[in-house]
Amino acid sequence: MAAVFALTAVTACGSDGAPLDGSLGNPAPAKNGGTDGGFDGDGKAGAPALPKAGSMAKAAQIVARYADCSDLSTDPQDDDFFPGDEIYDQKWGVTERGACGKGTRIFMFKDLKTFQARYKTELDEDRKESPNRGHRGKFLLGQDFAVLPDQKPVIRNAIKPGGLLILNCHPDFNPPSGYRKDPALIKGCVLTNYFED
Image: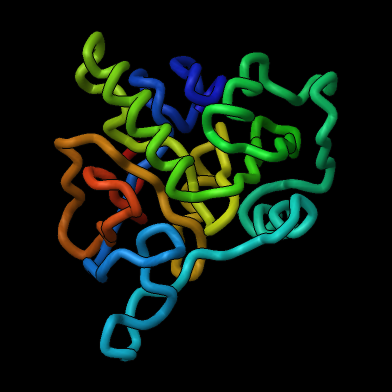
């Protein structure tokens, strides 16, 4: 997870430029990104909902449960911002970007489905040259924000019960039994709590 997605020399990311992996259960897709918000179609208890922030400040508070996010900046001129992250603004529907320092980035977006679709499209294109790219996944997702940390402990903490889930769109991704592999909003993608170092 070095230069988000421009990663290759990042701690949390693999050499394929992706930073994550995980899963347990298989509820039906739902509006919050793949999990059913706590209930299945019959109104019975199901997978827990992804956290929703509503603002960059709230997203930073959520991220602070897993990583140091006391020095949040939304200034693209800040040293903590990663060059090239602006590509997410238009094509991915990102409305605001933040950097917590220590390599953790937050992306607020308008529409989760658009964000997931864009990731899958770009991953499919990248895999033409590097078939293993994205096998670990990349972003940690909430309902209206994504996190891109570059430290493995942050990822491991974030995917604990009640936390964020990893977006994985690699066709060969198959976590061990007992991990989540919830359908995402885009066919071919899942949300998981399995992270392979």
